Image: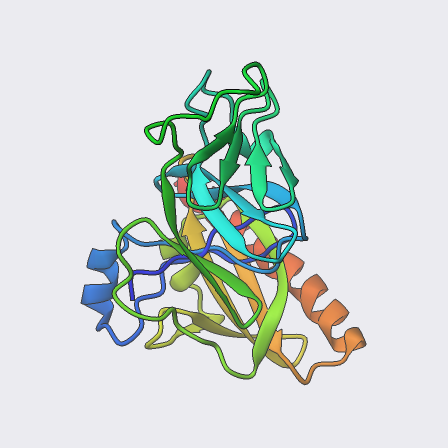
Length: 239
């Protein structure tokens, strides 16, 4: 699948998942796919970080999702800074309002004008599955992957590359692209999304049967895992 999932303020996932591919095929497809995670609140817009740039991810009052270019066609303001009212996203600068299909619905400075069809924001495929929000900048090749038995735990930034994380002796690669790891005695999955500054957004899923106490312990263990990764990375840079 060439679906992807972008992280937002309340989310925790980011790595290319190429379901059913061989490892070599998955690596080749990383140039065109990536991913996001977890539920965005009703009537909220957030920036979704992807290798291709930042996009506006928002949920309407009815709960429907939209993934759009993070640029208002009027003056170039980031739409992820905008506000959602009903089923539309408004730019925070001059209030131009856009539907989930990208069409401009209203220009406040010209209330009697019906905006031309040509005024629209580029819009991409987005779907929600298993607590994750998946987006695709191209035509989806199929349904996004699923991680049955696991639920989102948290997201964090790590000063280490996805390659270095995958090479850790603490993790094992899976056919679906996720990394299996044990944290505080619980089975977890890690997903990674490379960032332009050579850091990585690391997303962790945990067994859905884990208690609240177990999830807190796993979250703390993940922080220690990050510290170890970053220390190893600094040592390699010093060599």
